[in-house]
Image (cartoon, rainbow, N blue to C red):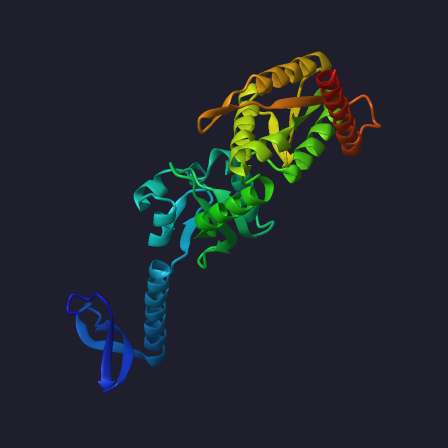
Length: 349
């Protein structure tokens, strides 16, 4: 003050015990004509409410920080560059990445490539204020299959109205997805042969018919029924019959393409859906299936079991609008029984 300069001091004190107060002290020198200080003008402002609010705010920050760090759900803040600016420990564990890595790349890089475009579009919509998302199930880009359920919400900074960010919450649902996959497999697959069951067969054939009609493509259905399978059960027992069914299932898988559907419809009946295949190719495949099954020699104890097969073929395409799933199934079934009857006639002759 003796130099002629004003001073401004703030401090927090307890003049009265238990009542903290904020002091705002402003001191200015009083100068004479020669600009020599002759006194001091002081203004003191006491603000008890300011201290209370500041302490409450600090307490809220501490509570928020504890909740952010300790919650079992992953939480992250994403800026308008679609990058994570802060994440908690749970998110780092779910994404299997340290925070330094999470901050170094766009957040979409941590989403599985098949899901990335959907996630990016959703994130952009949230940032634009169009909507929020709650419960998006997405795969992560991790060495082992991992799934998360994501919620995305838009927020804005308090200090500026034009700076928005997204709060992303993530819950690990990998165990649930695995359980759902196992339940789906139980519902759509035969427990003995692990082939698809009738439900999967009908769903796949319905989709194949729609595809054929839309793109004017051909396909075919093979119906396979094992000849005299009851004789196998009666002679060797039901365990031996199960061995035969599993061997036929492996044979059918081996004879068709990877994308073809092989199903056990029940008992000793099987079906194969051959998409993108014309009638000539389908009948050639049917002959191969018949010949290969007839040539099987399946060991059972000290004996070798043989089994015959009747194969029916029905082609479908996009030109005939009258073809339905029921018509195709019935036609293939009818041809299969004609061949079975023909085999029996030859044997009796």
